[in-house]
Amino acid sequence: MKIFIFFGFFSSYFFLSNAKDYDIEILPEKCDCLDWYGRCRVNGEKWVDDSLWKYSCDGKERSEASFTGCHEEKGDVPVGQNITIDDLWQVCTQDEQKLYFEIEPFCEFNGTKIRVGQEYRDGSFQWLCLSTGRWITGCYYFNETHTDLLLRVGENAFNGLIEHVCSKRQEYPAIVQYYTQTILCSLSSSDSDNSTVSTHRILETTSSTPLKCSRDYHCSSCDVCLSGICTHQSNLNCSRDYHCTSPCDVCRSGKCIPGDKSKKCETVKDCDAGGWCLDSKCVENKCEKDSDCGMEKAVCKQGFCKLA
Image (cartoon, rainbow, N blue to C red):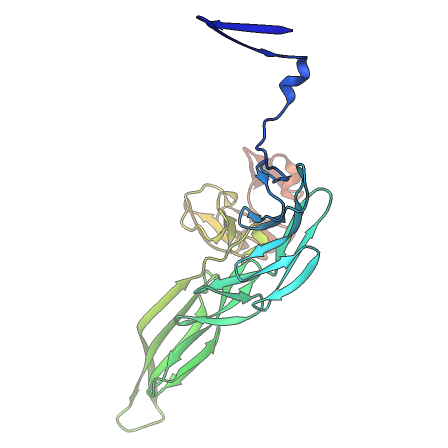
C-alpha cells in the first residue's frame, strides 16, 4: 500500500508494507540491554533500581539485564549469598518469579540498628528489642553520687529516705512507670517501738510504650492491636461487655472500666450487675434461648437470663 501526502509543490510519501509495521518499537541506536522499566542500557553499565536491586548489562542487541545482588546502605549483598553487615545477617536471592531481600529483624535507635534480643538505654528507661517492636524492661535512677543504677521492672531501691520504684501500672500492665517517694517516720514520745511510717510520692514519670503490632496476640493481655499500635481504649461508652475493646474491661454504668469478665462464682449473686453465673464463671448476661442460660430454673426473657 502506498500513501501520498501533498503540500503545495512538494510531495512526500512513505510505505506501510503490512500491519506488522505498527508493532516495531523505536529504540535508540545504542541499546544493548533493557532494564526493568524498559529503558535502554549499554554494555558494561551497572545500576540500582528502586534503591535496592542491582543490575548490570553484559550483552548486546537488547539482551536481558543481569541481576547481580541487593544494595544496602552500608554494603551490597551478592545474589545467592548470606552475609553479615553491622552484626545483622542479610540474604539476597532470586527465583523464576521474584527477587527477594531479607534482613535480620532489628530496632533502630539514633541511627543505630539494634538486634532482636538486645537491651539498650533510651533516656530513663532500659529497652528490649523485639521482632514486633520494643518493650521497657527497667528504669534508671541515680543516687547522691549521681551514679546511674538500673532497676528492673517490679524492683525498688532505697537511697536514704527516698524510695525509687520501677513498676507496671496495675490497671494497665502495658504502661511502665518510674517514680520516687519519700518515707516519713514518726516516733512516739516514750516508746521507740511504736513507730508509724507514711509515704508521700513527690515525683512520677510515666512512659506509655507504643508497642508495634499486627495482631492482638502481639500485645499484652489487656491491649488490642489498632492501626499497628498496641492500645488500651478505656472509658468507652457501652451497654454490653463486648462493646469494650480491651479484654480486661467490663461495661458498668455505661462505661468501660477495668474488671474481670471471668470472675468465679457459685450463684448469680456472686457476679457484678449485668453478669450471669455460667459454668462457675461470671459472664455477660445475654441470651437468645433458655438453653443459653445453663440452668434448669433459668429462662431467657428479652435477651437476658432470669431465674424462673
